[in-house]
Structures are given as C-alpha cells and as structure tokens.
Image 1 (cartoon, helix red, strand yellow):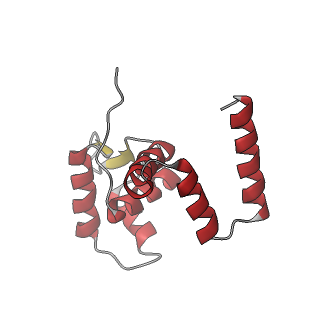
Image 2 (cartoon, helix red, strand yellow):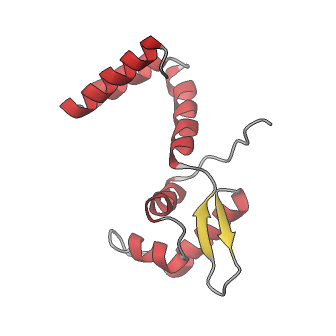
Amino acid sequence: MPKQILPKPTEGELAILRVLWRRGASTVREVLEDFNQAQETGYTTVLKMMQIMTEKGLLDRDDKDRTHVYSPRVAEEETQRQLLGDLLDRAFNGSAKQLVMQALSSKKASREELAEIRQLLNDIERGDK
C-alpha cells in the first residue's frame, strides 16, 4: 500500500504539531496554554486552526467526550522527512550534498552534533542505515 502524502503544514500548523508531539494528545485549551507561554493567542484562533488541520488530515480528533482531544496523525520524524524532501527538491535540485554543506556552513554545529553526524555517515558507509 503506497504511503499517503499529507499536505505540508503551514508555520502555524507546525507550531501546533510541535506542541502535540511534545505533550501528546491534548485539548484545544491545553494547546492554547502552551502557546500563551510565548505569545498571547486567542482560543477561537487555535480552535479554528485545529479544526482545519483535522479536515486536512494532519490531526485526529477524539470526540467521545464533551471536550475533544486532538492528536497528530503523523510522527514528527515523518513530517520532517516530507518537508526536507520538498526543500531538497525545490531549493537544492535534489542534491543532498548541497543541502548538508549549506546547513553546516550557515550555523555552527556543536561538537556533539558533529560527532553524531560522523557516526551517521559511518553507519551509512557500512550499510547500517
């Protein structure tokens, strides 16, 4: 069965997804409380965005109880892969080398990050990944 390709989330939708990936299934009020720690957002704004995301297939809604609980339909890593694949095709003409070179030259990586990158490259060369 082919993998279903979901629509790319907008910046606002990604912010909601990040909350849900971190917290797990949550109500609109719980997402709103998380949002309001950084910037004041209205309840109806978050509610409407989450309703749209449900219609788009980005969220599942459990409406068994009076208070609806939302959860992401796709794991964070899968969404990242989809967005990265799109960026790779559009901005780097499919070149993973160019993408990695730009990423590493535009922001200094920590020693730990570089060690993880080296390990990943070693694993790929050995055929482990």
